[in-house]
Amino acid sequence: MSAVLVSRPRRLGENARLRASRRGFTLIELLVVIAIISILTGALLPALTMARGKARLATCMSNLKQIAVGMSLYSDAAGETLPVA
Image (tube, rainbow, N blue to C red):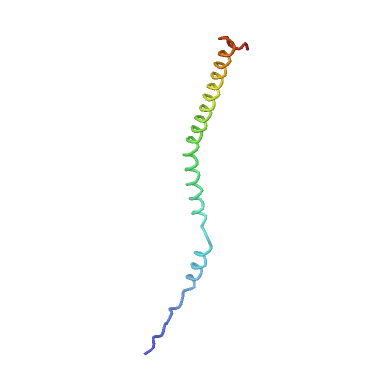
């Protein structure tokens, strides 16, 4: 006995739904993704701003240290006098 595969007839709306599901994202899905990205960006910007401020502070502290070391070396070489501005 051989098995015969019988497919059921498709309804007219079913083909349209299959084609629509293969097309891509819907407008609602794209808007949701954009909203999520904007929320995440808004949450990360303050942290990035704070990190940038800390980096500037570290650079400033390093520059001040270099000035202090230079003045110390100068005063040692110049007989304990500081440079005149």
